[in-house]
Length: 116
Image 1: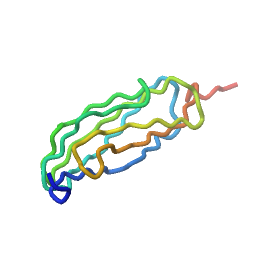
Image 2: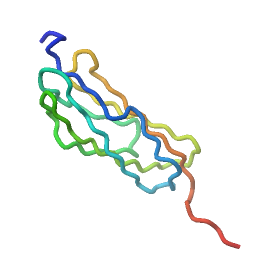
Image 3: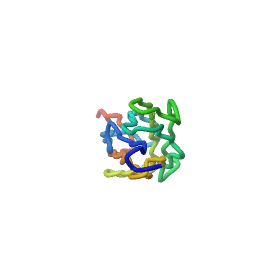
Image 4: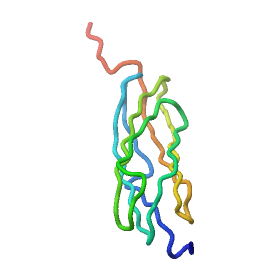
């Protein structure tokens, strides 16, 4: 397949900041994957840097001009003010076979306020 006829992945966002979240509490965000190429885009594999990220995808083959939803569930297991994880999406896009999405959050022990 020639590059000019290749599928082309575009993401609604390449980074998402969840804000302040409680340790062990899952948060969800949905990214949109679009195929701006001429042939079908195949999602071969989605891999996270840790077990704290899970996902569902609405379809693994995206026709030209079409979109798919990639829903990410992030459940951090380490308390850290500046947490960052990366999700890698492998496709058959000849110019961008590995797309990355950064997930960021300020993970705290609890969101509860202590009243005295």
